Length: 416
Image 1 (cartoon, one colour):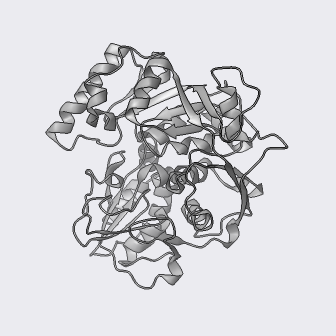
Image 2 (cartoon, one colour):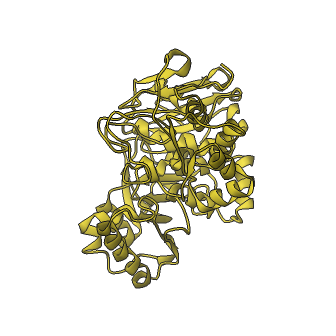
Image 3 (cartoon, rainbow, N blue to C red):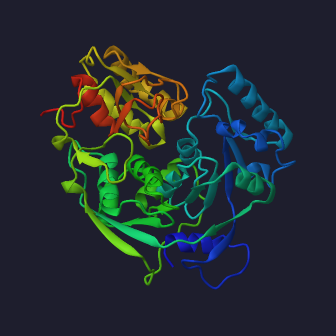
């Protein structure tokens, strides 16, 4: 069995001899995460489960609407707050106390190697960086999980992605993902398992960025192997109880892809979609921008904020560009502040917000207008994603966004 199959096997409710593609796996869930978006679903707030299967395995995180952008949403999330005391939930992270669930879960040890996590957010494949299976599920299914601690999955085939060498200077994990997406295209119903010697050159931020973005491949699960880097991260997080999973020597894969990271250059997803819509920045030509955004579960991490600060230090962004930078968690915000990154961005005329999903969602914190041209490090760029359906959204790395904000047009290399 490969890593995905083995984790599902280890969590099977009923004894099984093996797990393979096409099986229906009924599994126990180690943690269920609810985000504030659940407040928008009447079936949840009007008729929530009477009690959770285990209140210590339930997390409630406010991350999309922080702070609440309207009276209606403020009233709705108040109903979630009442569930916290009713259910006895200890892992509750309200406005100003946490961050984006996919980032917060890694910081707090919710994502343990070999574990299985369910969330109401589609980018829950982010857990794969931690050798953890995570899946975004609909609100009705999360209600079932909250009540029973169980769910089910149809086991899909797995694509093995082997990384070699290390990223060259100026390129990032987002660029590596774009390269991957250019090769695999859309893979609905399939999984991704990462391997190869190049992984040892990736920190947890880079792994998290790539696994998070695998949602845009329509992947069911995406997972990295357990290694010394992840082991050190878990030790620093104070997490010792886990059962890491490795693939069997005879593990089967539907396909194998090899990516030489040293050959990857800065890339962007062109407006309206990612799949079959990616170009190297060097081939783009001059595209003037109005808005630049750095943030999201994929690229609002400390290394992303660092890259922005390094590009902008001692400079001013183009006078025609509006730059918004959103750290993905309070911990990242505090560390970026301690290291002087936030002050550097503000001095360059950028805006730094509180930790939230923010502009990625298109609900607040930087809604874009008709005919705005945007370069963003967020996760999606379909029409209307960040506000107006008449805006044009390009996706790139945090570094590409910062360089573009400085120049007033999309640019991937500071020295070109």
